[in-house]
Length: 340
Image (cartoon, rainbow, N blue to C red):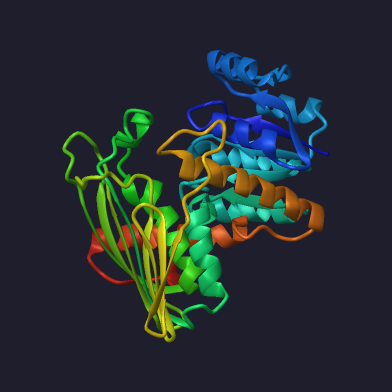
């Protein structure tokens, strides 16, 4: 049985802790947060008696196999480096780092320590998206030559996470990173990025609309479009919609979790709705289900001695796309990713 410790008891931690209860082969033995109120509330809710306000103390005193870091990006580098130097495997929330320098240092720290580092990049682990990715990888539509990944919503994400309205960066860093990662999973690595952003909501500091054109190493193209300023009924939050064309057919992940595969003049339609877990709630159940999938994958990889699909090394490529998109939007030019 793998023993884990949680660092961070904020907005999203309950989803992690509920997920860990269902993971085969792991248990959470200790909890850490600098806020004693949150620490007490979350510890009581999940029956975790070993509680700390200092991560270094927890790592020194507890016999842990891994840590799950559920804090905001500015704290990730020191916590990942601390965990790695303490000999722990690591799963870390996204965004992985504030910049590529920190991200590369974190990956290097885990590699030096010989420990597994996985990024909690949850969108490609949502079961509807995962089904689409698996069908494409299995060759159902042949070789993909175009992908459009879209997340457009008017959902008020600021009520639960008010800090999102305060940063100079918003939708690409917080949401677009997920959609960019999906496109990488479908179409492969990216050579160039061209992006355009807007701020529609005057009450926030960052951008809430982004359109990104990607040219992949394969020579094929993708479009990522994200918006938190879109009014639509019914509201599709938090669904990512996909359109992928291949040389043998097309695949669509449509609103309402409907998957369509068009091949040979025929259409196969499936309901790929995510499971509503006992502790989940709509409309968040899509994301909540993915937390369990990520955690189980992490533990399976530790058991089998293999790298997670969304490892720190892999996520560097997604984070590079985020940085390229911001640079492209600010300078109104196409950015080559290998120059970052």
